[in-house]
Length: 269
Image (cartoon, rainbow, N blue to C red; front, side, top):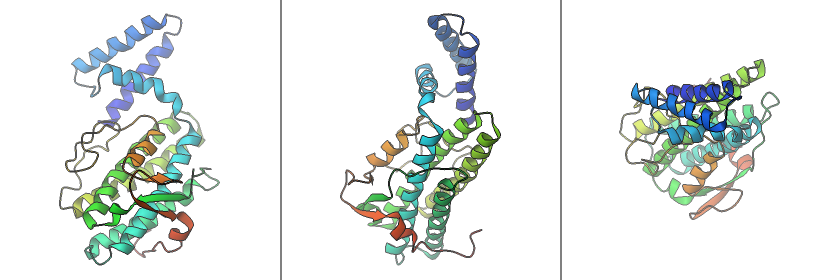
């Protein structure tokens, strides 16, 4: 459960901070002892070594980096949904087509908010190389959306954690923005799963860094991530390229060119 992981990580950090006057070995012992106790109670889903690593890498998650990765990811999502709806419009059922088109509109809006003065995010690149296989069939597109939306969910949950821990009004505002966007990404994932003919609302809690349990995906069995930059690695492993060709045959798409024809559905508010 994402909440349990988040709480235990925060607990470890608190223990470490409260015992700064003691040796590093002593602090590690206290953290590990707490981990064992939580594990015996069934409250922790990760091995101690994994939890320790998650705590140690927290400093890699800067606000600016999270905003940059999120903005770049929303460029990718705008492109994939817009072009996917265009290329597969005659092979997607009417409901799925409208859902994909609506997702394109929403991802574009997310990008505009993330790069607004209110947030200040700056995308790493405006050119995404999309594997040609993504648009080869409705199934390929929908599975790509499921995987991509889960990456976004994981990334925005990191954002919520980092922003909220600032303890400021600005941090709480950014945390709320990230939560609002994450909720929409979860809807996109569920609708794509449903269009694949499987259970869409398959989770009681949005997945954070646990292993992917949904069967039949390229990422099935793979873990999530605690460091925001790892989101890029997951997408690159799927063949996407950011400002340069990816690992699979693909086509370059520029955000401005695609966003200019992103659909606007009257039902989206």
